[in-house]
Length: 331
Image 1 (cartoon, rainbow, N blue to C red):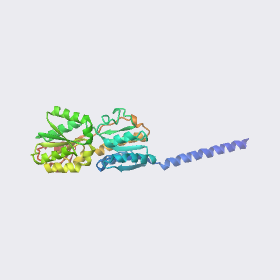
Image 2: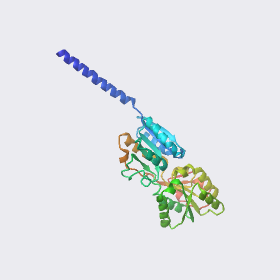
Image 3: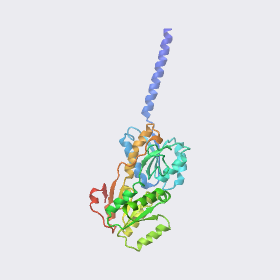
Image 4: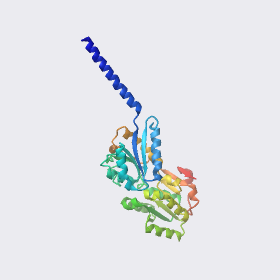
């Protein structure tokens, strides 16, 4: 009888030790956390770099391993369906996506895969039908909105204060701005608030070609161009920037990273900082939070950015005081 008890106790101790060993081994193996990233174009990669930097500060990438499968689609939305299929087959459950067009396409396809999605560079997730509300987004998506639509009046106001002799404002629209009524409403609101006429120009069609011809035949010393919050305009930014230099017109961007690349002025957030802000959301998802219930955030950091080199190309006069209190002046 005593011997049988000893045998039972021995078996129990061996089994318990095996479980503890297996648990310790699995903890030490640190299975990597996987994130699939779909980036509209190279211009939006700073957001991903910011996300990684934020994760590093949160002790990921050091104490824990995060594996990123990064795909830059160069504006080709037709690639997204096959990418989702590939990510799903690899066991990836979390996606990081940039721009409104990419986020919309992912949302349309995600019922099949049920990825948890974090977005960046989305101008307005509610008006784009990506979220039910900022507080409770639903649809297994959340992120940091670029707040680009709601900032249109303030951005133009700040630009007019800087370029104080401005008489003519051109607003350049891409594909997204042409589709969403909110953009026209915000531009209308700006006209009323600032008592100025704003001429809308559709990029990439005959209207834009006629616009360029007009610029080539007139004095542009009292004009500015406002870039709409469109991924199409970002991917074509170099061409637009060179045009603004050619005709001596200040180019007002929707993000500070474009000022670094040659736009003249921005009152805006920063792709890198918005990506870094998203790392806290990703941390919550890694810890088991439901993406549908994580409130969408607005940018923590918005400021004035100026490119001093671009100022050399323009004819419009500007307020020198802005150079002293800008968040950053690029050379």
